[in-house]
Amino acid sequence: MFKNFRSVEKCAYGRGSFDKLGEILASRRQAQNPAMVFLVDDYFKDHPLAQKLPLQAGDHIEYIYAGGEEPKTSQIDALRDHIRQTVGLPSGVIGIGGGSLMDIAKAVALMLTNEGSSTQYQGLNLIQKPGVYHVGIPTISGTGAEVSMTAVLTGPEKKLGLKCEWTVFDQIVLDPDLVASAPRDHWFYTGMDCYIHCIESMTGHLKTLLAKPMATKPWICAGRFFWAKRLAKTPKTTKSSWWLHTSEG
Amino acid sequence: MFKNFRSVEKCAYGRGSFDKLGEILASRRQAQNPAMVFLVDDYFKDHPLAQKLPLQAGDHIEYIYAGGEEPKTSQIDALRDHIRQTVGLPSGVIGIGGGSLMDIAKAVALMLTNEGSSTQYQGLNLIQKPGVYHVGIPTISGTGAEVSMTAVLTGPEKKLGLKCEWTVFDQIVLDPDLVASAPRDHWFYTGMDCYIHCIESMTGHLKTLLAKPMATKPWICAGRFFWAKRLAKTPKTTKSSWWLHTSEG
Image (cartoon, rainbow over all chains, first blue to last red):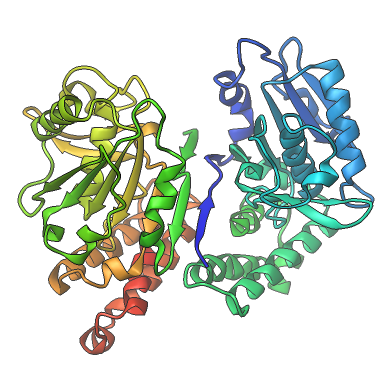
């Protein structure tokens, strides 16, 4: 099977990279409508992170509860309509949170430029037009949603992603300080998810020669993180978070 | 130091991916001037690969000798002027060969849209405008030039790269069958270059937490390739080439 993969175009990483978000967005604010829409996990509503968002006049923040079920097509459609009404067509969408927030940001970015309901586009390469510029900023490690080419949505008929090359983020920001604040149980589950995904990629029937080395190293990084003795002892330091964060890609 | 790295946008890989080049280029041929310029190592002049280039009317091939010194600024300027005169501003530039051909393709793509001599732009972020669409197709493993953000050129005053985010290829095609035909001594030297670069990335003073895992795995892949017993026994198979090819990224 022929594969021509699109990568995340730009990646900022390391401690303090979140503080550069204003600079990163500046060049992508269009003259016509410079507004950016920030979709943020509501866990951060009264968190210091919310104070650090590089807001400019006309920007819009939407705090989203992501603790329940996975994102729904109806939720995306409603959010898209709400943004269209309040902001118009923004210069970009920035998702900040876990895997659900990443998927919501990717889906909203696509649905802002594609007419109708997101249920029409659940599947591979059904999306008709590129979305608006979109940025993913994960605050937990191991979901991999910031690098995947799908935005998984539950619809009335099926649970299936908006999957195409335009789904992929234009920019991601990997700041270990954001991850270090994640609750430990969340950390553990998404980390295990990553660990198991690596094993799938390393051993699956359809594995490729490129997938194997790309999965082996993060499997080792995640494994190192999970050695029980370390996990029990390790405080939520930036460095230990980073091992898991690094293992995502 | 804040880093925001641009990646190669699209990567096609695996056996037979070179045969898909026509399909890959089709969507990037602009209405105004659909011509593509193929810059090919002259090693391939009478090689079956030359017969497989997906040429269309107006396309241009330039066979380039890369066995001597590294690419020069004067060579890039002359090549750019020649293309401008014969093709105008093409839709894209495709480099096929080793590290020198990769660097020549990157530099020519940039110099087609930036006025004056390439000597003016030797350094970091001196280039003023994005270049034309450019594709890298390495025929030897280990140089890493297909993924780097620099095009190293020797000028009258200095040996320094055209280094900026626009230098990075828009598309690369990694086909192990192309690499399997490389002469064994070339293979060995570029492979060792890759192996040493990995060690530099793993141990350098300015290494980052992301660089370390990204360098460790290719170091293992390249090392596996170089185990003397294997190297002596291994014929030029696709699989063994792939180990080294994979280690580049």
